[in-house]
Length: 134
Image: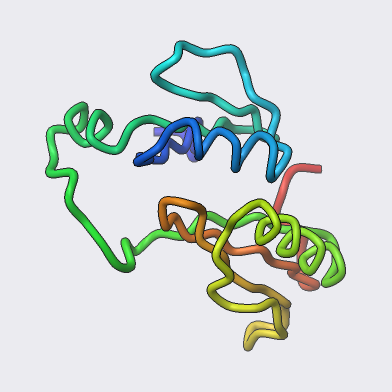
């Protein structure tokens, strides 16, 4: 298997609310897609939004679940100021601030927010090396 992630699909409880959050709130560019799913182009991958129940059914797993799911999505930025600005944009769009951006033990700067369905996002600046597309 080649080392890449082609798409991240999030199961959401309210597709229209999530579309507004990612498209209008965060400014992610939305692709044309069927009415039951939404796709956004990211640098090197895609983000998909799909009904939580339908996604669980597709994977043949139970849809219930709460609390920490053992996964975070990370968005790396070029400076602490960019982290702060992106966090404010997310909060203004309706995200819940989980951990305010701050210096972290590994030498960088990061914070966390939850999207409207509780998916955990890290916003980070890593001064040791760039983690992202050029």
